[in-house]
Image (tube, rainbow, N blue to C red):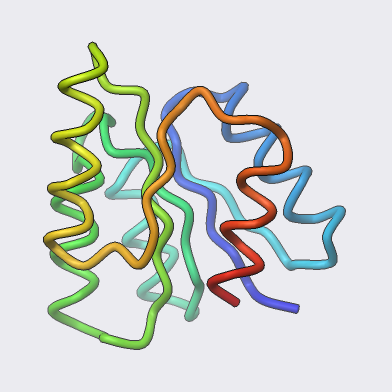
Length: 120
C-alpha cells in the first residue's frame, strides 16, 4: 500500500482517480493545484499522480521542484493537453524533467491502475 497524492485542477478527474486509488488499497490525499500539492508533500512523503496544466504551479514546475528535493518520489504525470501534439509535447516535457511515467487523458479506468501498480 502506498500513500498517493492526486493533484488535478479538475475536481471530477481528481475524485475518480482518488476513489480508484483508494479502492486499490492505497492511502490517498488530494490537491487542486501544484502549490497545494507541494504543501502536502512538504508535510508527508507521497508518491504522486499529477496533472500538467494547472493554475498556480503547473505539473512541470512541480515535477522539477520535487526532483530537486528527492529522486525517490515516484511521479505519474497525466495531461489532456489542448491538442494531440500539445499533449505529446507536454508529456515529453514531464518525462524529461523527471516524471517516472506519463499517461495521456482521456484514459480508461484500467490505465491509471496499471500505471500506479508499476510505480509502487
